[in-house]
Length: 608
Ligand code: ADP
Ligand code: MG
Image (cartoon, rainbow, N blue to C red; front, side, top):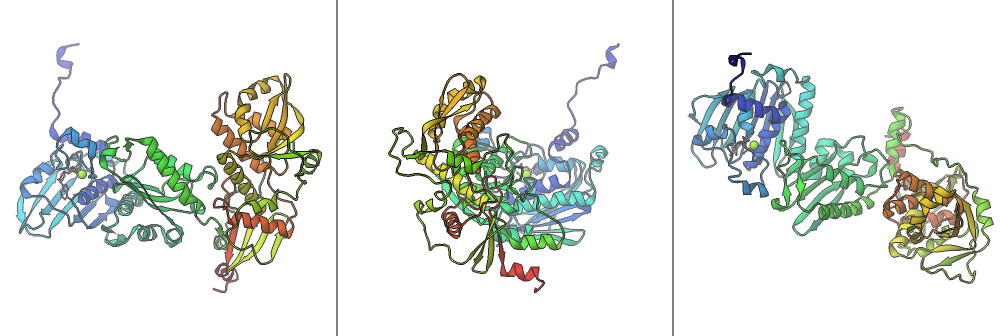
């Protein structure tokens, strides 16, 4: 091989450098729009007009009323690594603008035909320039309104490989609109008008607040159901809205976070929402929320991603804790009843059943509990408070197989009047009751399951789990390996009211169970615990284990679908629900009630 065949090393021409950089940030019309809108917003614009042709491929034109660019700085604006937004590396630690990399205009101008006109606020005259494939023409003085107008035509005209990756007009337009809408939601106070091929595609006026913008973007049903969130931790402010669980979707596209006006897609923040909605949303579905964070730019690093969509919080743990606590409180306060109107709509569209399972089914255990028998077989049960006390009390409180659990609601302070009006039990599963403007159907099992779980959790948090202690321990055969597995967790289990001890090689003695459990089946509980430990691996965190078992025991001990309830029991159940903020979905995130208003009924009977 001769030396002449070896390619020589050479610096790349400016245009090629910019085209390579463009590969990172400019993928399609939507990325052009994002960069140009960010520039307009950084320039302090209050009204932005965006005109598109062919999904933005033929034309993206953005007109803003921002601060403008001085004629002699125009060449710099188009030079790479030229920016007015930071000057040294220390500035990277507190970025308050949307842009800062100084690459966007250079990149865009290297892959499209651009024109710019700009006039600095208060200046008598502006300047115009054309730049095509990176070559800048002469800068001419020119008249025009204050602010900046940029036209980007024929995207990728000189890079056909990239152009081939563009999708159909409708797809590109959809992506552009998504970008605009996110920014419009992130920036209340700024007006946006978008046209496509001369027709209006989107508009928000500057004065519209976040809820009004959600209404304009996603419709009134969602906007009207949103519940506000407002909280702060020092100078970090959280504000925005959470949507009731019934708006949950299969994707996270309507979880929108804004940080200092910047739309984000961030893993941490999706985890925050997952935690906030845990138990209120069926597994696999995603909540809907619009949330803005305002904080000192020094407390967050936005320079971790070329498109600036991810961030790194300096004190992530604290941030996470603050956000989950605040959002969980807001979510608990939401109205979670499924509006009957939605069912009426679904029926009339003949869409059939909603996606969530309608009939409650337990994950079938091998050892089907026989509730009545088990309850009667427990001869003497003593209530103990607090949990640590094992001294048997005189058997003053005998727990009947059934009569006890529901009226116990009297222990919960009742805020308002008793539940009035007639109640009807349907199919031994649902409770029907009139409301002020319609009626409500309550799933008795789902509701009771949730209440039991909340009670157990509250007792756990107070450290006073009530225990039914058995005078004669029940022995449960589990096998040697399982008993070994269980042993290290016995103390933790004691704290949730499950008093177990090792009794020989493969046997566990059940000495006490949580009093909340309406139909304690000690053998089933022990098997459940062992299964949970096996599922979560060799060394499960105590908290996870407790949560899991709480979850399952709540389910097991609840009023089952199929139980006939007396009038008194129904009233007690509903009164407890009224006093519990978390009762609107069952422990698995399905709703506990469906509500029909008169309006729904009128719709169902075609009266309106
Ligand atoms: P960056 O936004 O990262 O600074 P850009 O390449 O997007 O980099 O823009 C370069 C510079 O041009 C900006 O720093 C800003 O000073 C100026 N500029 C761009 N667009 C506008 C605009 N619409 N109004 C005022 N100034 C602008
Ligand atoms: Mg920019």
